[in-house]
Image (cartoon, rainbow, N blue to C red; front, side, top):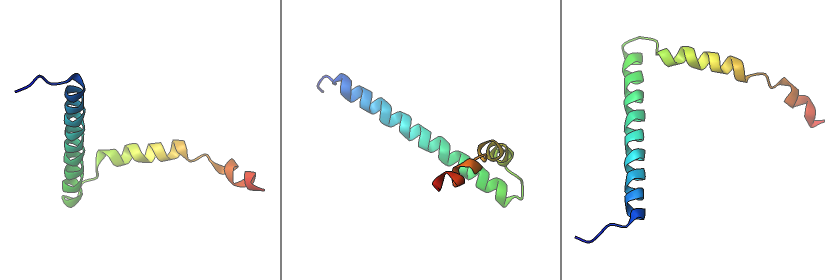
Length: 66
């Protein structure tokens, strides 16, 4: 087996990191779906509601079109 190039090692590491990230994301989605199916409220919903309140002040953008 030949020597591996550093670029190949970096690429493999990046692909592995992306694969692990996708797996973690899918696990989170599965957990939230299971919680919804069980009738529980996901914890992330409370955080999302707080984020919506902080990002909504955009009323000045509509009047700038004229």
